Image 1 (cartoon, rainbow, N blue to C red):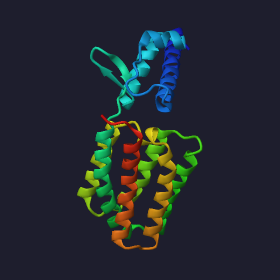
Image 2 (image 1 turned 45 degrees about the horizontal axis):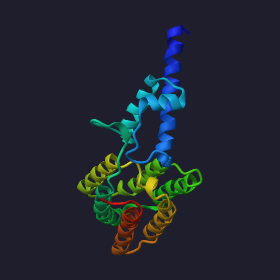
Image 3 (image 1 turned 90 degrees about the horizontal axis):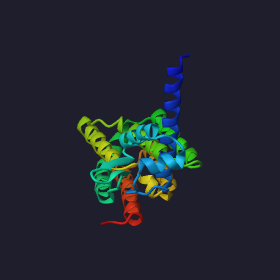
Image 4 (image 1 turned 180 degrees about the vertical axis):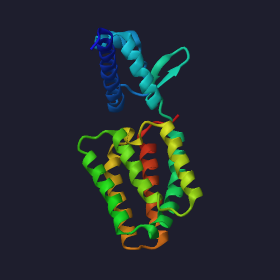
Length: 224
């Protein structure tokens, strides 16, 4: 291996170290929304040069965890609770209906697959990573929506989930207690689907599930 290649690998490992360190501090709340990430200060603190730190900040910006503001510099992305709440409320209506009309197309095998995803969410509660949990949450809901016979509704759901992902890191970062209740509600939805409950009942429970997240967020995060 050439010296240049070894040097490149060292840079990559330092950038990865910086990325994981800053990411964990943001997700754990050590660096709160709006916290300024000053390169020179971080370099002194970590003992790493500014180059891998800049690379780490670029990755975090791409993840939506960091934003660069004119005359301010890099900072932890500011959480817009009101916009997220509105999107969650819209999703509650869409998801309630989509879950209800998907239910008749879900046989035992499909319900079992969704249940396994929810089981993985339960396991993920032990060493809680809000971002990973959110990814599983999306996987769970879309394992139901994929059976939706309305292509336009599925497109709307995809658009709203994408919009939500751009506005937040993870709702569960701000309301971690909501995660435990969420998996219980998931199981309730699957139970209703499995027993062939009335469409209106499935829609009501699925809609209430998403609205409960919006309500928890409203109570936990200060508003302007």
